Amino acid sequence: MKFDVSQLAVYFIMGSNNCGGEDPLEILSEALAGGITCFQFREKGMYAKTGEEKEELARQMQEMCQSYQVPFIVNDDIDLAIKLNADGVHVGQDDQAVEEIKKLRSDLIIGVSATSVEEAVQAVDDGATYIGVGPVFATATKSDAKTPIGLYGIRSVRAAVPSIPMVAIGGIDLSKIRSIRQAGADGVSVISAISLARKPRVMVESMRREYRK
Ligand code: 3NM
Image 1 (spheres, helix red, strand yellow):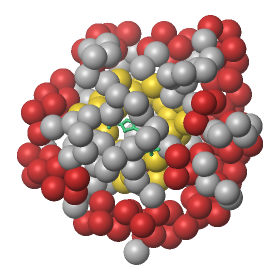
Image 2: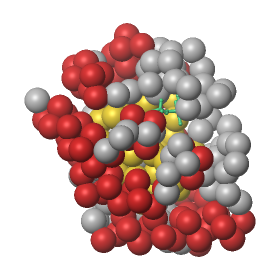
Image 3: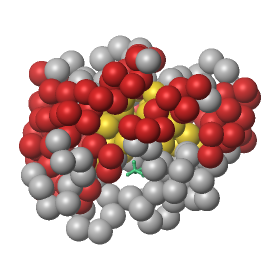
């Protein structure tokens, strides 16, 4: 799928261990119906599925995303991304280099996490399609998350790399969307505010509305 910056607007990230015991497929189904613009499969951390089970879950989620024409991005696992012919892959600072990923499949959307201006500049130089910048706020979802960079951090990165598509991450809920937009991010990426919402569909609809304001 061709990348467009509008796909970053409300970017949902989830793995089976982010769902508070609910069915991840049900949550994704609701999130898609609510209008998420991108999905990242992030099967990581405690109780995460591996091997065939992970692959099977990814396939099911990819199929659901395809029926909504929502990009399906795989976190960190380039082999799985290629095997499934995913739309993209998202890598952290310690994961596989952008250059190597491009050699394997040049048309993949490649997202890179950055937590500072330096890392953002490097990601742009390396040829990232978009950058994920954070954590903006404190988050309980990622145990090894860095110190929050705040809205100031988002503004600093935006000033340093003005044209790369940029999505903010970490501790983002509905109430933060407007200020993040004002700080210059093209969208928000969210795990728990959607995956643990009582009504994920309604939450995503509200986020889409808030984004447009
Ligand atoms: N990456 P929530 S913060 C997956 O800073 C992830 O790179 C981060 O979850 C980073 O929306 C984070 O529940 C967790 O705070 C985001």
